Amino acid sequence: MQTELSRKPGIEHAVFGFTPFPAVAAAISRAGGFGVLGAVRYTAPDDLERDLDWLDAHAGGRPWLDVVMPANKAEGVTEADVEAMIPEEHRRFVRDTLAAHGVPEPAEGEASGWRITGWMEQVARTQLDVALDYPIRLLANALGSPSADVVERAHDRDILVAAPAGSARHARKHREAGIDVVVAQGYEAGGHTGGIATMVLTPEIVEAVDPLPVLAAGGIGSGPQVAAALTLGAQGVWLGSIWLTTTEADLHSPALTRKLLAAGSGDTVRSRALTGKPARRLRTEWTSGGCGTPTGRGAHAPCETGVVPPHGGRDHRRAGGSVFAPDRTRSARSASQHRGGNQRLACRPVRVRAARVLDPPRRRTQDREP
Image (cartoon, rainbow, N blue to C red; front, side, top):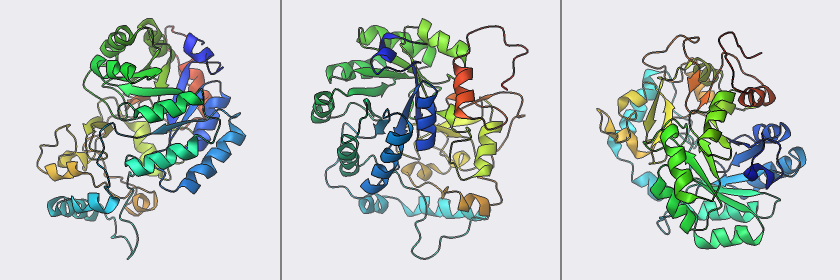
């Protein structure tokens, strides 16, 4: 499945797979797509260098990098400053929710949970410095257009720059900033997402930024859906959630994997709780406490302020495998979509998921993934 965009970096299929896991990114590239390593979770340059070294050795020198570098930034803000902004009411909600599910208090000196610090300017700049020493082919910025100097540095190295957009207005701003590829990220998407559905958003952005190439994202996880995206004018697809339940993914939580596989298309909500921007996540008792709406105006609206429960694997297992059980769970066979991509009842290798994505449209009444 080749398009003008896929021919630029020399990939076999116009499938762009975003993932936080190096092994998944490498497997996507080996399957003929392009693996995009999300760098937001990296805080130490050495850790990013280690994983880019590994990717360089296992993905044919074709890793990409995705960074979070907000267009509007506050200078000199540290992680400690952000922690100080969290109200006690929200901290109480966190403690009560964890206690209700048997998650023990962290040991003295142990971090209370995962923190996204890659969105901070100084961290993102460090990620960029590391990435530009590697043979990356595309730099994707997850929150708006990167600054002019970042675009210039990438272009000086013949690196394409991409950015997601949730509206035609956002897309036009990307074009004005010198972005090379716009990702039309619809409401169905599993990451940061706006309120316009992929079916509507994609052709709007294609028209708004023509002749720039557009990738479609959100609710895409099969051959017919890919064909629909191309029909709408996209030159490829950007997929993320579909890779979470591959055998190469390193979620460290069997309970979370089971929930992803069992979730139906109605079992997700949008929340600002993780980064301050609306992002899709599974519906759980955590989200029912006010984290399940874009505005966060619920009974426990403070949970929109940004503290997430520990989810590094060990704490989830201690909690009896509940991972904050959803208020309702659909039959595992009643629907196959979770977040932005189609999930199945068992983990599959990346190559199997990729084959399903590339499967041509046809009647699928008797079709089942092998």
